[in-house]
Amino acid sequence: MALTAAICTQCGAQIQVDESKDAGICPSCGTAFITEKVIHQFVTQNNFAGATINVQGGVDIENLYTLARRAVDSSNTDDVLKYYGQIRERNPNDWEATFFYAWFANSENFDADFKITQDLILQLEPEKQVEALHKIFDFFKKINFSLDYDYGKSSPFPLKNKQLYYDFVMKFFDEKNPDIIYIAGFLTNYMEYWGNKGSQRFYHEILSREDNVYVPFLKPFHRLLHVGPAASENEKKISLNIMSTEGSISTLNKLLDSEEDKKNIFLDYYEFMMECAENLKPKNIKYLESKIKELDPTYTFSEKTAPIVKEKYSYNRKKIISIITSIIFAVLSFFGGKYLYRIDSEDEIVKTILIALCIANVLSLIFSFKYSYRNKATLKTWRVIIKTLIVLALAFILFCVIFEHFCLKQ
View (spheres, rainbow, N blue to C red):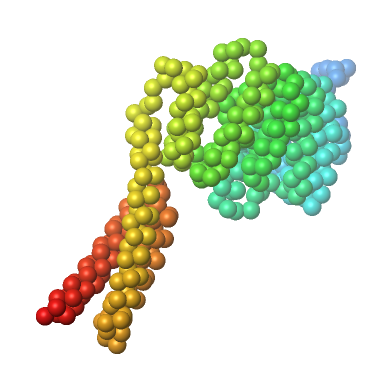
C-alpha cells in the first residue's frame, strides 16, 4: 500500500493517503475526501505556488460540490445541509445550493427559495440552463414523488403554492430555445402530482401560441394523452373528450409541415382509443372505426380489440332487453300482487310473497339500468337469480288465478 502526502481540503491538515483508493476520511476532522483532490491540494500548495485553484476559505469548492451531490444521491440530509450550506455561505447566488438546501431543509420558506432558484437559473447562459434543468429533472426521477400521490399519501414536494411550479416551467418555455424547451418539457410531467389539470392547462396554453418552436414539445403522442381521455376514465368523460382532443390535434397540425405527420398523429390517437375499446360506448367505437378507415383503408383491427368491439356492440342490446323484461315483470308483479292481496290479504305467506316480490322487482330494475360491459360475473348471477324468483312468484300468482277461476266454475 503506497502512501502519498496530501492536504485535507476541509481542515487543511497534512495527511497520508492511499493512492489506490478513490476516497477516504481525514483523521483530523473526520471529513470524507476524494483522494485525487487532496493530493492535488498538496501539490498545488507545495509545488505550484503561482497556480490558480478554486479555493475559498481553505476549502476546495469543487470538492464541496462532489460531497454535496453524493449526499443528495444517498439522501443524507445532514450532509446535504452541511455541504450545500457551506457553498451557500461562499456563493449566495448558487442556484444548486439554494434549491437542494431548501428542499432537504423542508423550510417554511421553500416557496421563496424556489422562486430565487428560478431567477438564478434564468441568469445563466442557455447551455448552463439546460444543465440545471437536467439536474432538477434527474433528481425528480430519482425521488419519484409521484408514487406517494398515487397511493393517496401526502406529497413530499415541499412547494405550497403549486402555481409557482407551473410558472417556473413556463418561464423556460418563454425563452424559446429548442434545447431548453426539450428538457423543460419533461418537467411538465411533474405537474401531475397535484392532479391532471396543471398539465392540461399548460399544454393548451403552449398550443394556443401556435408557434413552430414548440412542436417538439407538442408533437410526442404521450403529451396528447394529457388533453384527451385516458384508458381508466369512464364512458362519459371519454365521450366528452374525444372531439375536444381532435380539436387540439387539428391546431397542432397547422404547425406541422409533413402531410404524413398530420395523418399519423390522428391515426395514432384513434388507434390508442380503439385499444381502450372496453371503456368506450358503441357509438364512439363506430365513430373511431370510420375515422381510422378514412386515414388508413388497409387498417385491420387486432385480435385483442376485435372481440371487445363485437361484444360492446351487442351489450347495448342485452341491456335494453334486460330493462324491458324488468319493466314487464314489474307491471305483472303489480297487478298480480293486487290480485293476490285481494283474494287473501290476511295470510302471512301471501304478505311475505308480496314483500319479497316488491324487493325483487326494485333490485331487478336497479341491476338492469346499471347493466354494463364491465359488470362482474357475480352481478350477472344475482340478476339471473332475482329474475328467476320473480318468474316463480308470478307463476304462483298465475296458478292462484287459474285455480280460483277453475273453482268458481265448479
